Length: 184
Image 1 (spheres, rainbow, N blue to C red):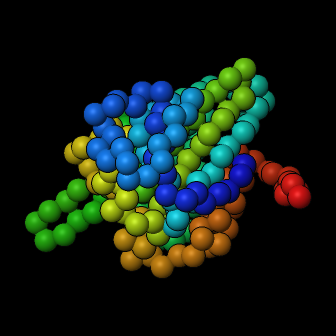
Image 2: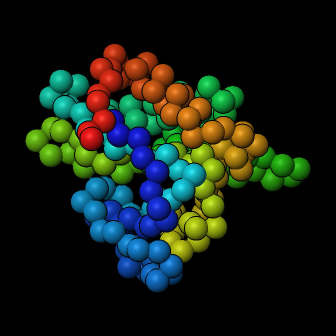
């Protein structure tokens, strides 16, 4: 697992629709081989590239995606954020309520590719990105829901705190890990 933070950019998964790129000149657009549609990556967002051998984990792509969702939900729980999965929608969602209104916003996206039972690509968790940057795309092809972040929810988490929560939750979902050495 690699934890990164990208400069502002849009990525297009294999299901991306041209009409969902609303501002093609706003940020660089990178076509990828991952599943899903358009998403934004940028400062304040933790992107985790997950390369796991699914031969050792049951050869179950849906189970793997649910595991990624559980991983993020567990990390968010450490901040007191109640999040969950939604039937028919990949990613992690939070319910927001106010006086007389309620809506669901996406706080984390998932886009993976599996080749020879090895996973590629991964997840993005919105810690403190500029949420206006999502306005150049239809995020994940979904127009009827919004996008949120920890900071937008009132959780003033640092990227290091988000990383610690992700690392801890990962082990609970996927088992023990061996820290790698960063290349020089």
